Amino acid sequence: MKRIILVAALLTATSANADFQMDKTAPEIRAAIKAPAIVDLAIGETGIKNRPFFCVKDGDLFIIADLPLDDKKSDYGLSYRVKRLPNDKVSIEVTEGKPIYNDPLDKQIAMTLNEALAGTCEIKSLFGSSLLSVTDINGKAKASDFLK
Image 1 (cartoon, rainbow, N blue to C red):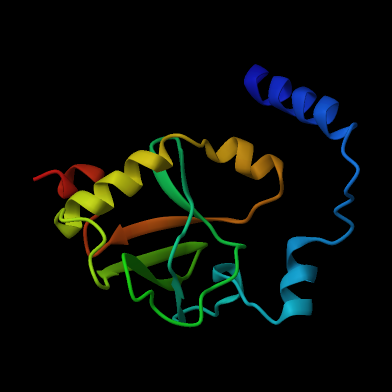
Image 2: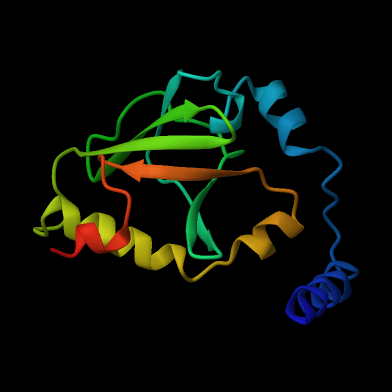
């Protein structure tokens, strides 16, 4: 809790010097540019996100759900088909376009999961980001399943 207060204090102090004003919320911006996000999907609907952002809270994986969805799968690298589930949850299917790396798909997913550990969900929540819990990725429910 002390970390969150410290981060909030630092953000307040640094934002006092900013000139650019964010006078619209994420939902207002998405509506204006007609770009729905994962959080806008109805239960059972799917959408593509080519570069999602994840975070970890209490050992559970969450996806930042208010970034705009992509129109189509990426020609290169990984694409994430996100299916909205009840109770603020999602299921994710990862596929690969033309490879960027020579690594197997599971290793690339593991690298993405490692990146998720760099940003805590508490900081994302501080900015009002919508977080949805990830139930599985390619049918696997644990990070260790991608390390075999």
